[in-house]
View 1 (tube, rainbow, N blue to C red):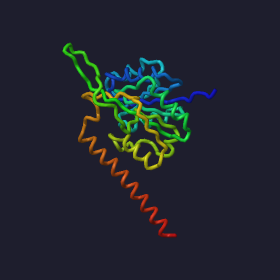
View 2: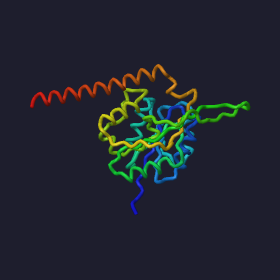
View 3: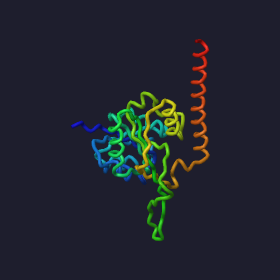
View 4: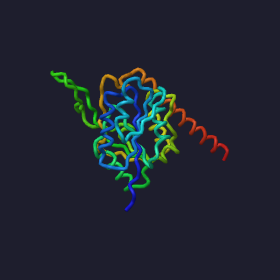
Length: 237
């Protein structure tokens, strides 16, 4: 029987004490093993270290605050798995996320990245002050690292996350993966709960839009350069 591959799961976190434990539990409760879980603390000033260290099956590392891209890169560098997955500290996975996506990869060895659907969850508070997250809108597809499973070999082709981008480093990475013609499968199974609350960094609309434009311009510049290279080569023939 073929040995189950090790999956390295990387959770970058900054001041995530409110939700980190639930995120970790959603990884450790996966209907799959073996899993290597790495929490990269990007300079938190709250009780994030205590939360992470309360789990025996978590590798915890701390770095000075450098942004999500740096934290993700640190996790990839430390990881040992043949397959890599990411989860933001305030989001959750469904229990069958890894097993479901791994089955697709094992069925088609040419696939390099698989991406499922995400369910948006909105923070809600009842009359008694109890807080919960409730589904909002229909599940949707987004180029989200939290809903993906990636072969380690992809990083040799696409490269690491761009640490000059404090926001939208994941979008930039997906754009580079597309430009590199990575073999991707999109499936409609919901694998991630994206929990929206008042502290999400994606709520910084102006900053997000600014960095999104930077990521798109970087992609456009790369493609223009490729066209110029092709024209130069054909011009010499």
